[in-house]
Image (tube, rainbow, N blue to C red):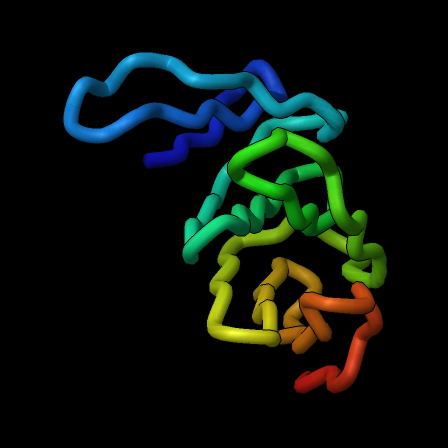
Length: 105
């Protein structure tokens, strides 16, 4: 299980014990949205970035930059990340490379 917070961190918990496993640091503003799929975590922040993390190691895999306002939603599905922002856009990213593949205004 994962959670975002106002202290700019993502927390990873074991289920069903809910014991804190690790804290992921790198965002520079509130982490507002998180998603977990398999061994990957995606987080979206008021710092206008989306980050992809390895859930097992805690390593940052990609910092996705392109939004010009805070990120308001994230989703991870297979090899794609989708993010929505207050900049009135939805971006689709390649989870393997971190490249932006499409922008929907």
